[in-house]
Length: 228
Image 1 (tube, rainbow, N blue to C red):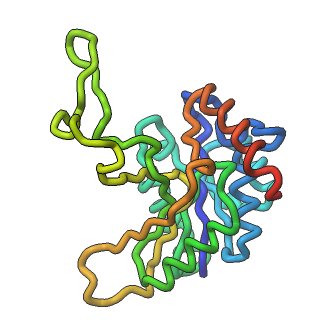
Image 2: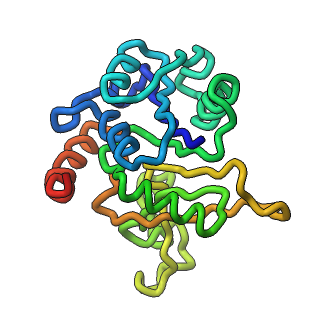
């Protein structure tokens, strides 16, 4: 059994009701649910939420909401992993033991093609986890920080003389999907093998502010609408 798990807390603060807010006319979470359904990989697409309103919208787009998330896992400080662990526990008790699962965020740039690509990588490399990543748009070793006087200084002054093209490339979490293997792992593996699934920068926007939201809609219209 393979399960998709989509956490969607009702009390988001930076963008209220973020997961169900219309993104180009459709609830944000609908894009993720539809991509998961299109991939054809999942026996269940489960949304973990504390909101009846979120639950109803998730069901409208084909997800299952078989329980409401406990209040102690729905405050502003709860990390994502306990939420996922709680959902997995419910799955084991009620549906059976999953072989692997994929955790998602409500994100319009999640695609069935990339879900399939991540799955293929997970299986071929016998990895513990495959997650979507993207390259930072500028070398992080040439970044600045603000000092006590209010000015800026190099965060890593030892790299100030270096040309940007000579610095190592760094990647960041794309906040899209995380395939995790639960059964088919080498017995002698002591450290988890986390494989990166590289995504182009135009498919990665961290939507945390109103400005991010506007940028994401413009990028989606520019790069993604022709793919639908």
